[in-house]
Image (tube, rainbow, N blue to C red; front, side, top):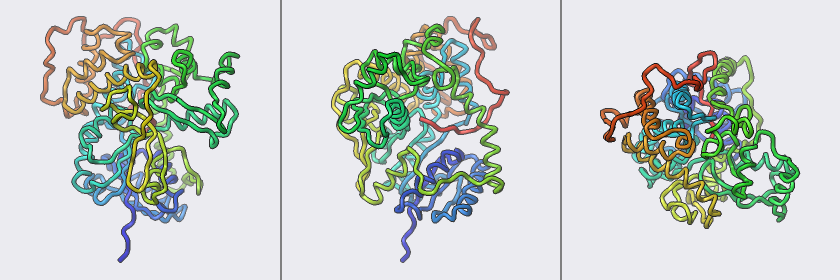
Amino acid sequence: MKRQPLRIVMIGAGSAGFCRVLVQDILHFEALRDAHIVLMDVDADRLNLVERVMARFAEQQALSCTFSATTDLTEALTDARFAISMIQVGGLEPYKLDINIPLKYGVDQCVGDTMNPGGLFRGLRHIPAFLDMLAVMERVCPDIIFMNYANPMAISSWAKQKAFPAIQSVGLCHGVQHTTARLCRWLEVPVEQVEVLTAGINHMAWFLKFAHAGRDLYPLIWQKVARGEQIEGEAYRFEMMKAAGYYMTESSGHLSEYLPYFRKRKDLQALFGGPGFAGETGAYLKMCLNGAQQYTEDMANWASGRVPIPFERGAKSVEYAADIMNAVVTGVPFRFAGNVLNKGFIENLPHDCCVEVPVFADAQGLHGSHVGRLPEFCAALCLSNIVFQELAVKAGLEGDQEAAVQACMLDPLTSAVLAPHEIRNMVDELLAAQAPWLPQFRGKTNPAPGARIGRIPTGATAPARPQGISVNGQIGHYDAQGS
């Protein structure tokens, strides 16, 4: 009897650029090369285009894997062994609201997909979609391993693993890999020879160990900093290393959003920030809007065969998903930085929060590992984000409007800029504007007592505040995934 091929499902496959990278990674491993890859997306037109691209890809490279496509989640997941999520609910339309409405109130976000009002509302949009996925998995493929790349990583992973603890799932990011490579280039040491231990929460994990051939590299880092040297575009990160004693895993623009110190004042942004992901206002949204046209052109050219689809046989990106699948299939262990519920892995963070720690994959599945205690200051900064995340999870799972308001009141950046009544007004406006993508709030009213004082009237803006991010007025559904 012929063995059924390994079934791998890519949910949100309309993000074809990232999907193609993951396919190349899968083909890197002999144990995965004959897999059947299911492309699933709720947008039938985008899915059709992606299916055509992947068919062309298979023909161009004479691939041994096969592809199918469906908009039906149950059909996609039936008998699946692995699933990878790269969703962006609503595309760019609600993301523009995530950035522009808070900016009107004075909350200046660089990326806005992890913390702050942007991270909260992206999480509120994504949680119902994840619950739908997991409910289907519980029914048709309960032994699946579910890997998520969609932000907000901590909020999404916490909600998924709390609501469906029996489904093995993990949140994946590439901040550790990219930061490690960048530090190695700066220090002029081979990246494949360094020993790294990171732990904390997603986008706020700490390099607790950074060594080469048994040599601690932190003294070299401090020597370079003392000479006034630092990596271009990373002023925020080096400023926080001076404060905390450890380097952080996330880029400066992201990092500046998770703290109360910087983005509340333009002079501080001018001192530490820079263009793009060095800290520019709305940098990621601008990148997505600018990339939308290029995405459309690339997809059309690839699908038609006018332009070869980029592929380097045997190449492997820094993403973890294919390594995890290979470890489970072959039993050869693989260690990576993963987002899982704490369960005591980091002793001085809450037991049930979502942490980013070393995780091992093998034939038995996924296993988080014990780290111990974080340095106290590092743990305290993580806690400042965790209290926000906990209320965001509550709001997302229960449709609790007051939890959403209180999450923003505890967000380090938002609370450094706005008074409580201003935060309430902003969240009310975001809830109303994003109602089409927030099914858990339908039919519910905010039970919070008291009048909404200091409200900004409809159609008005606070004086002398930025008016929002737009590039040629474009609104689209381009998924530029990143965590």
